[in-house]
Image 1 (cartoon, one colour):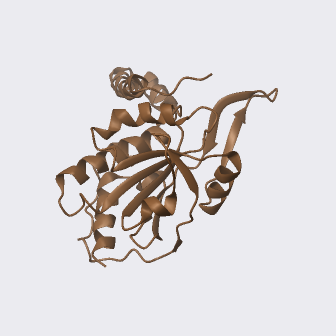
Image 2: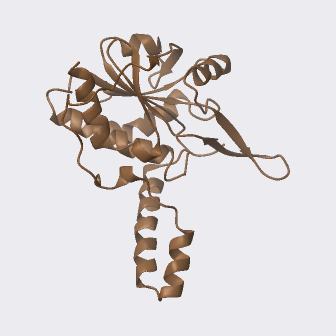
Length: 237
């Protein structure tokens, strides 16, 4: 069985990127260009925002749909539903799997959401009105116990603000992924053998207190500053 993508591995990956950048900059020009070409390009969410955001309430995040419901199981093994968890809370919902090693995939979402959670703890406007939900689409490996260990690295004793979830069966998972247009593909090699990794488009969903969908963030716009500003704007409606 594959082991979960650990905090140490995540930190090592980030360190590798930093070291790779330094090596590329220190190398002769022809080597530098080749090194930079072979490096994964880090998403904007890892860096300070490159532009100024509009003031809270000066723009709109209109309703673009309704958040679908689904039966889920949290990292403590308790059965509940998305709608029950979303009740009276502004929610950031992400789909992920713990062993993802794509620096601009699930590790990016975890990094950005962790930054958001730190902001929640420090901002009285957000503390009691916002939550994070991360639903795994790797049922074979992301048991509640695995999710609990994964979440413990980020929660900092604030587990009620960021919950890690799975589904009770494959049929429920398939339906909730369809409802949120979150498609996944099990990666295989040239001989048809399952590799264990899962290809997917990274999306994070902003859902208001009435369970209305207000925004969907892709890699290019998944940044803690943007998420917090949008949540405050939605709350100011």
